[in-house]
Image (cartoon, rainbow, N blue to C red; front, top):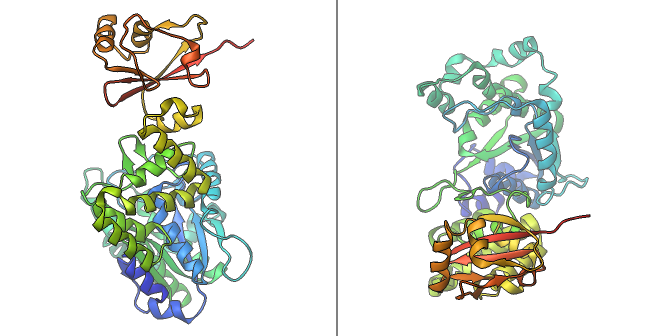
Length: 424
């Protein structure tokens, strides 16, 4: 299968410039995707352009990851109904630094014809003067052309309209493409379908200013089978940074993919080939209860982002949790598994704590009366051990590694209690 054919098979072609398929087969080209540094980490929605660059690199093409240290100071209006909060240059620089390490897990930045580059558009945009921008870039675009772009039209129809700051973003991104074309002979930009207007503006600028041919390739925006936004959970955005979304949570996000999305996501977010994905689709159709495709998806994507050790740890923690072996888990495993459950702390007491008082002070129960009724009814577990004596005493020896108690109320409501020891 040729490169463009693989993108089509994977469902990754929403729009593409005429002639791109043939150009990809003619020899090495340089392609870029832009990454918005509005946070210190990329998120799962960033994986599609990252994987596009990685697939192109594996096919022998040279990728550029462009971090928008300059455009990040303004903000892209594409897909938005209100203006972004502007970040300071210090915030943007810190975010750019956080993104660099994440990209290196997917792209090979070693030297060579297909070696990846990481480029920050602050290099040229922060040095650009208003006069030079209007004279060298603005003259190539009519206001009519800019008003016709979908991202601008939507904002003009909104109650707040669009600021000149964001209106100019289209030209800045077009200038990025021209600059990368001049510096690195870049002739392909990839992104999501909401970027098509910005990408075609860059292609037009290269044609007008350099008389050269440039290309664009955009993938569809991802939604779930239920029509909801991809990459959002009850806990919020799913980040690539393990400090923001723990590897166990990350693994569970993919494992919990709906049946109707799992094969599509295997095509989007993994390097598994057509034969392997067809086999998983077959197995999932025969045994849907075993969630073959979801397990493969969780393993593959977690391995790409966090490494194979993180996959083993996530699977081990899940196995212990669902087999009712909380007491055998380590503190680190528990903090990953229960990262989003309510937590509280209590001072170390050598003699321990009456369970009723512990439950009320930790807000597991609203009153001693409620705590007593729950315990008598058999609805309270400490580290998976059911407690039915309302006079029970919980001691530091009951805590996992002397640090944590996992208290469960009913079937699903878990609470973490940390034991704080005095330091001398």
